[in-house]
Length: 121
Image 1 (cartoon, rainbow, N blue to C red):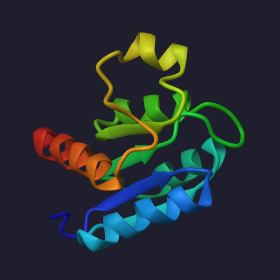
Image 2: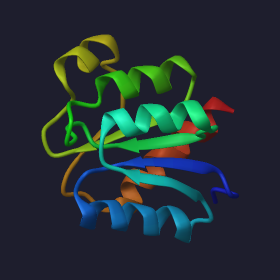
Image 3: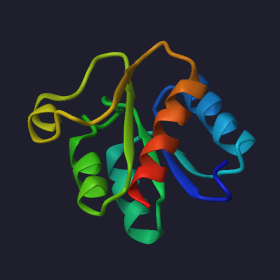
């Protein structure tokens, strides 16, 4: 389904990160990460092409807003997978951004991302 596309996983809860990585790999994606901080993820997205991203809204170092905005500016499809909702600044800038509340099945998260990737082709 993903045909080797690089999918960024930014999640600071190890079990959830592992689950997301497994589903991406099971559908033939290449996992970039998992990464647990916005700072590290910002460096990584400047180093390699990212076809899509699954992002937690609140990470160890801050909320995901600067990372999400950078990816959106580049035209990278993003899905927010969170237990808290979108950060205020991100919600104001991109109210249409898909957000899935935890707990949800990771296959659902991946399906939303794949739809966004296919829609951006």
